[in-house]
Image (cartoon, rainbow, N blue to C red):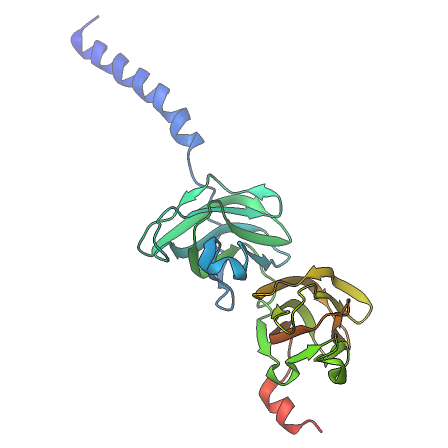
Length: 268
């Protein structure tokens, strides 16, 4: 065989061995789709400084195939730099755990098309991580994503239950907007009086969102996931003879028809 023939045979064999490996590592075909920004989500999670905000971010997803997730993250909070994140859709993990950089960096995950109910971004170490600018790439949204809005209810802050707060009753009842509810968050503590056995139940009408919260004396922020329910009232109930303070109450709605503040000002 001539030298030219040798070179040709060697080149052919190399190409034959490389092509299957290359094809196996290709990204899924680009189907277009749209990146949807969840600017109402994100924040600092995990660790001792952000643990009161929980150790995960849970985002309800649209009924559409998902092709990608991207966000910015850093762990420049506190003294240590050991932040790790895991990203999943429902129970399915997307890729490996992420070692989060000290300085904010973009992270993007390509996904073989899948559907799901929730995108979950959770910490995997006992360290704070800041997650911002979360976006999800949908394949075929038939209509614009329904925006979700957090609304504060400062006028409903109160101390309920026990002897010192008996005049305020044992319950807080907040009238809800005519829209679906996707989340409730609030700060609660029982730093009233000498005993610390305050317990709290949270309901949306008759549907229980949190059956029995053992309220910490020092206080904690609680985040409750609500799966797009409608109702007339959000209800907080003191379950024991101890005082419980509930404040910084916020409700996440979807599908508000008119500006929230405008309706509140004009309502009787």
